[in-house]
Length: 66
Image (cartoon, rainbow, N blue to C red; front, side, top):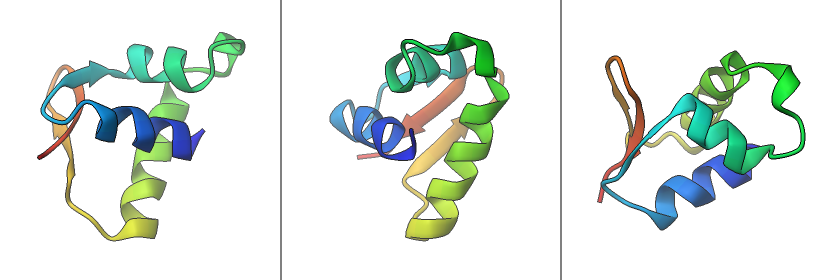
């Protein structure tokens, strides 16, 4: 799931996506797990890669900066 989220964000730099949009892309067959998993996956991606390219857009979602 982490790779799918990072791939999708990097594929569309500058675009902002809600947690639901990212979740539906990363796990299209398992919507029951919850949207909070996207937040924790973003945290893990940031920690593993030590990058600031993924920005939180307050009240909306996440964006990958160019």
